[in-house]
Length: 143
Image 1 (tube, rainbow, N blue to C red):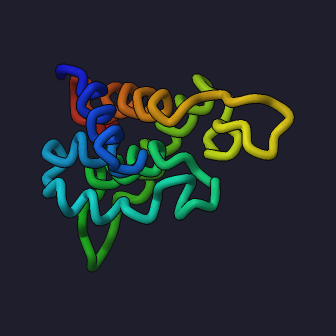
Image 2 (cartoon, rainbow, N blue to C red):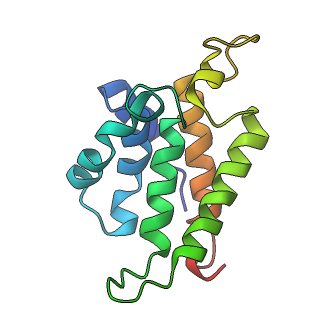
């Protein structure tokens, strides 16, 4: 697939939070309207509602993992294991690349180190990982 990192950056510069920028960039590939993805991810920016927790770009990536792999079976859900495995791959790859998955550490807030990664950098990294883990050759839900 052609990379959509530039599109995610455009959305972020337009005012989307990090989670929205990642989720909305790939919404069409997971069968979700961009407006719905935007609304779903509204509260996940700035480390989950401004609490400086999990990076918003990662929240957007994990949201996509669920949409890719969930069986959507409300009566007898059977896809949690696959969803969790994809999420773990995304989080581990991001942590390996940046040394953290939390907004405050990535930004160097209340830490003994400076900034590890900017928001645009986190978005680009999350998109790169999404493209590799979820949308590379083969169906991610079968991996």
